[in-house]
Length: 535
Image (cartoon, rainbow, N blue to C red; front, side):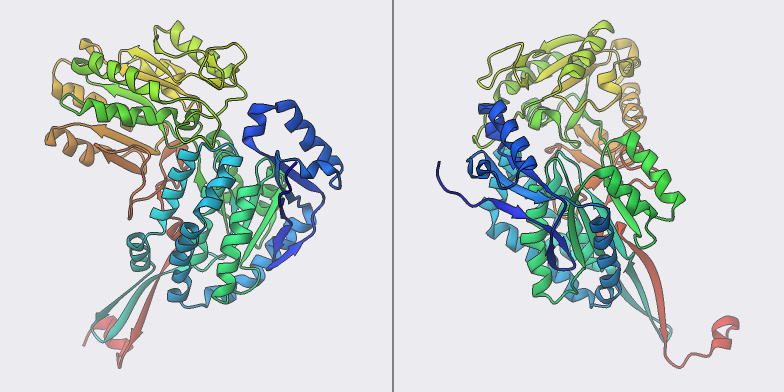
């Protein structure tokens, strides 16, 4: 077997590598498709015996130390000790971290993509994730953040300042499906002047530990940040979250996960005086109005299947004007043929394996029982796209749902499924006697969604576009005639309303979410008596 260097990360606490309580190993995603038995056996053997020669197997790509209670608390204490000194660092110096981070990601792009593909991210989607980070830390976005962090005015002999101050210690809980890009949001919290504790998911920690330890850590050292301003541990979720909630040293907890669990966690945070920052499930809607460019609309719709739908911000439901429904469905049926399975490092692959697919078929049956009709897909498939009862991939599946009023009786319309399973809702004539009534019903449908991450509209009519801009209040982002999942400068990459963001949900700019507004007045030769009562 060829020799290779195993990525190995201890806990990162107070600027030092700290021993953990054992190791968790990462095997390549390709190996799980080639020889799942060998991959699982290697992982099990190494976690029982870290000195085993199995570490030299080419399937093994890295390991991360596991944190126990004492190490989790030590990381929190290190952050709390560093927080006040870091908050005193001038904003301009802290803001430099954003551009430095972007430059470092570009320099190490190949390394970043290699790690993500080893964790089962298709290469094209790994590039998309990197594009998110490039836009979040673009010159345009950094300028916008800087303006909102500190603004000054002159008024009647006073220098007035409206600024944002850091909350203190921010703890991050990224998800299993996209840990590293989510962990990258911590740089914004650092720029705001906070100290950070990062939990790398125990099931998939490698990319998060690489990003924190090898990328962000050295950048902080370069700008002379205090040791302890960034800490990263690989640990169990409940164990860690319980300790963060109970700790008087933690101010904010950035939680990314499912809606049901996240909303319960929100209550715990508030009860314990923490600010919860929630990134939960999405159930995004795309509306297609007559006159739209249907080929491009179909491209955006098929983003639903990227990563096998296991991305919170992909489209989850399409609502189409009945006059163009058949034509749109035909375009989608053709476009979906380009979304195929394969090894994650293959350039054209967009589907990811789905290990637990029983719920996919239960959701599909429930929709068919309510009158849904399969347009395409509906089966398991092998690596080469051949339908199979034992395949680890799922075909991109489109279901037609007739009638807008009762559409949410279909679970695939009402809730996020996290599968490559997309309903196209076609209103019946009875749903709207004319276009004005139909437009109102479409907007009501979007606004009544319990979730609220992203919404999209495809339309040619300026009147329809303006109606959506003026009246759609649901969600953190509205895209019109554009990619649903694409990223742009200035605009938020995350955040939403309802079951997506919780009680405090809105478009999420982490540099703002982890800070608070403060007003300052510096007077010059002002009489306090006259300031109150006038001259």
